[in-house]
Length: 310
Image (cartoon, rainbow, N blue to C red; front, side):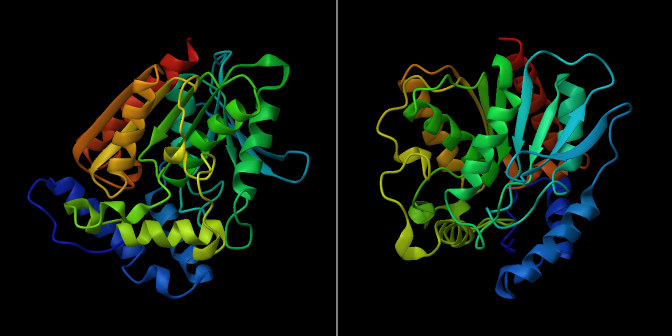
């Protein structure tokens, strides 16, 4: 999460969020090895964790095959539609702890049961292990025909989009919707090199390329033309689940979100798109310290609730 020249369009709350984040996860966090990165990321998550909304409960369990999951239940009868949430972290960081409070707030705000997935991380488990785990969790949650919305942020949004492509390839019914928060969807994160956002604070295009290579198992192992690995590489977007896509303007992944929303729309998929120019990657953690981030999160909650009503 690199320092950069903090442009004048970032308001004081977002600047404070960036500074606080860098106190936990400094510029060189990815240079000391995976173990150190995970330790620092865990410290970051703990430092920003908010309390659960009143009445929300959570219980941990495991799916067949040993995939750990956490199920969140609101303090009232939830909607029939459930939410599968896939956490961000570049495919190498995070787990049930990292987005625990986000899931709890989505549960209460959208009135849905939420299932968070502790999918396998790279480099120990490379593509498609994480997607396989997301697939298994979706099938468990959708047992009996229950409608399920899939959602995630960053790498988790990539997995949510990839899961929709996998289900279409297999001829299976689509999720009730897909909610993608600052998603990384291209096989070439460096395609934005030279643009202002390529060297943004919190995440750079070079960081994205690093995470993508680790996920693939090495630079020489990047799949070509695989829409489940890089959803923007798809040649056909028709028939995918209705989508709500959220982008941060000062984020190297913003272009992915813009292009994916456009591709879905051109293919006749119902899509809503929101880009906040003053937000940066990882703004979910700023939702309680920035008005703009708080409003964007409220829009995420509303999108989940809207897709759950379809």
